[in-house]
Image (cartoon, rainbow, N blue to C red; front, side, top):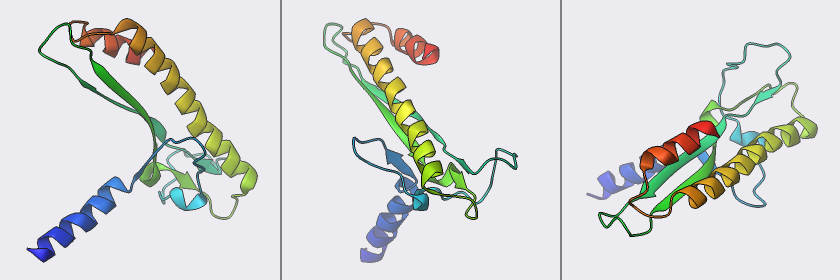
Length: 134
C-alpha cells in the first residue's frame, strides 16, 4: 500500500508539475522551458512561451444562487522551448511579458464574466461567448 501511495504521489508531481499558474511576483526561469522541440520552425526564434487560460465554474441547481467562475493563467513548461545557445536575460524578460500579457487578458475576461453572469440561471453559453470573444 505504501508503494502505491508513493507511486501516485510521484506521478501527480510529474503531471501537475508541467504547469505554472500566474502569481504576482512570480518570475519565470529558464529551467521552466522544458520542451526540447522548437515548434515555431524559425531560425530567428530564441524561445517560445506556451501559455493560456483554464476556466471552471460551480453552478447550483438553485437558479438564484451565485455562480462561481474561476479563470487562471497557465504557463505550460513542457510546451515552452528555449535555444540554450542564444538565451539571455533580455529574452527571458520578453518571455515573461508574454505570460504577464496573458494574465492581463485573463483579468479582462474575469471582469466581463462577473458583469454578465451573476447567478446559476445565467447561461453558461454566455460565458463561453465571453471566453471565445476574448
